[in-house]
Image 1 (cartoon, rainbow, N blue to C red):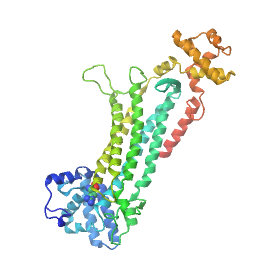
Image 2 (cartoon, rainbow, N blue to C red):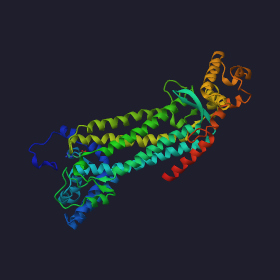
Image 3 (cartoon, rainbow, N blue to C red):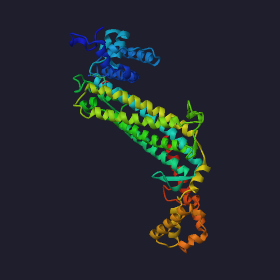
Image 4 (tube, rainbow, N blue to C red):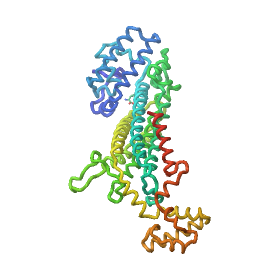
Length: 460
Ligand code: ARG
């Protein structure tokens, strides 16, 4: 057997060199995209009179038959043929004989592989967007049920001000909304066709690149052949958007892990998404959340890997570019897995409003309320801040919370204090009145839920 490019060579490479240079071990995942790209290319060559109608018929029949075999898992590939492109050409040869050799007219593997990856990512990005929407639905559902569930809000991981649980969950909803927007926006740039750019400089054949782009459903063809075969910014953008998404999922997972601990007891993660310990019988670990948090690392690593690979490459194609694929495939798989796990796990979460409420009562997160109370009664805010600080200090020394102080003690710090101070100090008061746009007040959160529903209706 000789290589498809063997004419210029006198000696053949050893099997282990072939093995090192081959990409078939991973680019076999592009089989359908590669066959579809070839069908479009051959169709265009026929329309342009470069191939005869008979040749086009034979080639497309052969390619369609390979497509069927690929779908039913009947194709076997060989490292000897290096990559998916040459494996498929060799298989096409077996299928229809020497006319198979005409398929590669006016094309190079360089534009071919870039075309395959554009087609592949276009499809996967659309699936990722759907996966994000499912997770948003799960968050939205819980948020609808927990507008008036109060929990501590944190800054510096110290209790800061009480908030609505729905508000906290919706914060992630909006992060995901922007992730979706980024992926959607990136589709515009994935939608360019490299096909027909040739090895680097175009071709002398009278091809119609706009036509092959159209046949493949692309919005346009790359205007520059060097750019078409050598840039991978569309993959980098995908990896960057993926990293951002994973970072958001990872932060959420970190909170779920904390909330599931004995220290918080804010949630129970369902048994389906937890595991036990082989030694400690009492353990129930939020493994799935930990894994998603962990997997964010590999996605960010894939982004760094490709950026580093690209930064020193001269135009146009270099074999280094073969290394663009595994990180992309791995990222697609990681996103798909993480999004399904997250949607399932979030759907089955049980929240414990009592524990959350109790936590808001055993802290000083109502101190701002006290300062605002004095300010409303006419004291300048700076002075109110000072008086409240002194009262907190008093409580810390006496081991009391603000609500436990008698009115006389409040009044010894300011005569503006009256019986209604206890209403101001209730956590629910602090939450429900914060109705500035985007705030945690119950009415503001209900409005936010409506906005969230509107964007879900728009996208699904
Ligand atoms: N397997 C190669 C890749 O993934 C295909 C392009 C090869 N082109 C070449 N001139 N060697 O990059």
